Amino acid sequence: MTNKYKTEKLPKELKSFDRLKSEKDIAAVYKKGKVIISLDKKLKASHTSSERKTHRIRVAVTISSKAGNSVWRNRLKRIIREAIRQENVLLKEVVSNNKSEISIIFSPFRINQVSLKHIFLKDIKPAVSDILYKLCKKTTNN
Image 1 (cartoon, rainbow, N blue to C red):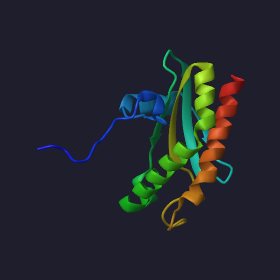
Image 2 (cartoon, helix red, strand yellow; image 1 turned 90 degrees about the horizontal axis):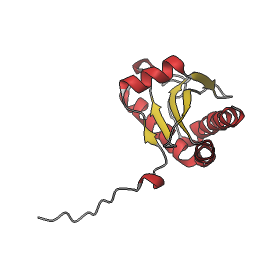
Image 3 (cartoon, rainbow, N blue to C red; image 1 turned 135 degrees about the vertical axis):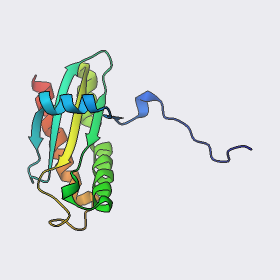
């Protein structure tokens, strides 16, 4: 039996970002990282950067269960990931020029299901782009 759907894995260079998965790495970002809050105070991001041979961007999205029900939380995660995918061109350039690895954890700062029942990409994208811009500015200054 053959698979009628062809699934091809993307080469490493074409991936927009890697997922930050291990509990140890996430704990290290929270412990050693610095926090950036978006101008509209919707999102915050903890980040660390280090010089490595492999220059890559590692991203995680964490949302507390107190923020809303699982449908709302998963929708917010998908929206944040899509906004990062669309806005990370500048960050890729900074990482490749500095030969560094950046780990970022995004989480909501002042939004939850009660304050923002229906959430869309247009609501989150400015906050993500603001955080990524601030992160690029800090990374190039160091």
